[in-house]
Image (cartoon, rainbow, N blue to C red; front, side, top):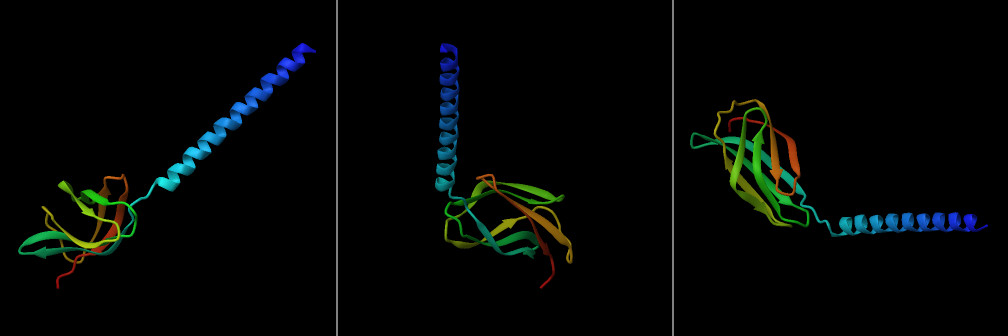
Length: 134
């Protein structure tokens, strides 16, 4: 009889520990999702254009998220990758136009893929634009 009670107690303790672990992990993930407030960039316009014989990437963006968006790297896929010395920031609820000088030459009537790397780990990619003279 004593063995059966001991096994029953061990099983009950194991079940209680399991429920406690499940509850704790649920609370932690719920708190993380409630507290995590990401930046959400809405790209309104993106152009690769020539200004004063220099190619520039002009991005008009709005941060509709709740955290500051900090762009630290820009890549024109398979052409060039620019690490910015100081991150370009867009505060929550703000809309701004960013101009980034490019170092390579680009052709008109071509589709380029641009990636924006944010400090939060988010990568906005495959934003395509056809360069056309004005």
